[in-house]
Amino acid sequence: MELPGSHVGPRARLLNIYCRGHLGISLGKSCDLLAQWWGIPLSRPGALGHLAWGSKLFDPIVTRLLELLRREDLIHADETGWRINGKNVWAWCFANPRIAVYLIKHSRGSQVLKDALGDSLPGVLVCDFYASYNFLSAQKQRCLAHLLRELHGLREKVPAICVTKHLQPLIKLFQDAIALAKRRAQLTPEAYDQQGNAIYERFGDLATAPSTNAHVIRIQKRLHKYVDELFTFLEVPGVPADNTPAERDIRSVAAARSDGGVNRTDWGATAFAHAKSVIRTCQKQGRNFLQYGLEVVRAAAAQQTPPLPLAPNTS
Image: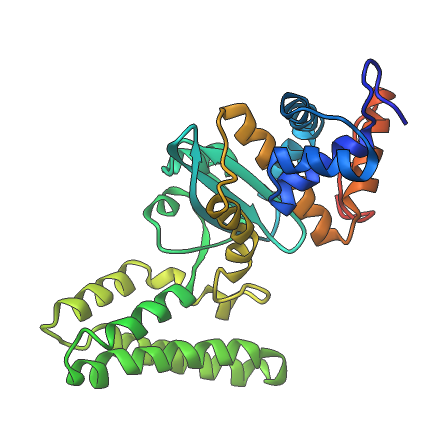
């Protein structure tokens, strides 16, 4: 398969996109790879052209994936820093076990969430305690891994009596709640509800235990504020207690940033995000990115609606 008016076919172009969007290889190294292994001469502007081609090719697919994701029962969300032309921006990830969509925006505010996911969601949003998530109307599960890490860290900052009376009991409480959720299938509904109610009673006692320590008071205020978003995983089967999947999905973005793989232009950032969205969704679906990319190229050449990188009967 060849592309009209081009000496580089779609396989080489898709490889260039894969190198940039997943392997973290710079454009210069991508050009060197094509030249050394396949004898394809390519300049950096030519490689940039491949990214622009891929961004246009995958744009309607990313739009449809985001539309599907909004209707899913479960969505994970996370964000990390990025740079465009030396200026700090934000890379966002919205994902679940089936789909991953990446966006790079100049804002870390709630408007990005509204633009991406709408004002409300029918499913559960798993996220950290960042305030922008507060403005999205949805059932939420706040990441207990974040909370537990903070509680563990505070043990070195507060008096021993606070650790014994407040922090350690809270740590044990959340650990017991997570263990209970994992044993759901082994318990009768009655036994599960009984143990869940015991968790809630312990939480109420600990969240209101009097203290004069500023760190403990701050934690208790957070527990009160997010009381309805800490134990969703006990109520809704399949909802995890932490945001580890999103952190895993966005980790490669952070790694690329550390390696200097940021962008010089807004369109370059969009192209990078589109590539990551399609590649990561292919991985979740067990799809080969090159084979899928060729399917999209064929559909575009035939002026047909491009297929989604999802397993049959799941779109």
